[in-house]
Image (cartoon, rainbow, N blue to C red):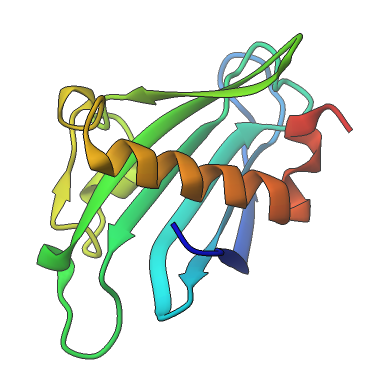
Length: 143
């Protein structure tokens, strides 16, 4: 995949979290490739509780712009964990993820439709780019 760059577009804090009382945060943006947008993303986590409230990343991947519709895009859900050897992502089923019901999404892909498929390689390249470039996610890296 060619060089990707992110465009942060929004952030929202809400809470308190029902189980710990901390604030939850959602940041979102777009991921651009050489020919334009390739994905929108949402990253959700509970502030100061990254280790025990695993963050979620929802990716809406596909064609964007004039002449496109939700049918041109699918949603992939990932769970994030910071391990001793660094960050890791795991594809999860999208059933409880807010982006799965977005009008921007044609189809939310179950885990079985992502693992071992070309969309998995694309999703991991996108989420690695987001983690590396979106400074709002510094807490997820333990910084």
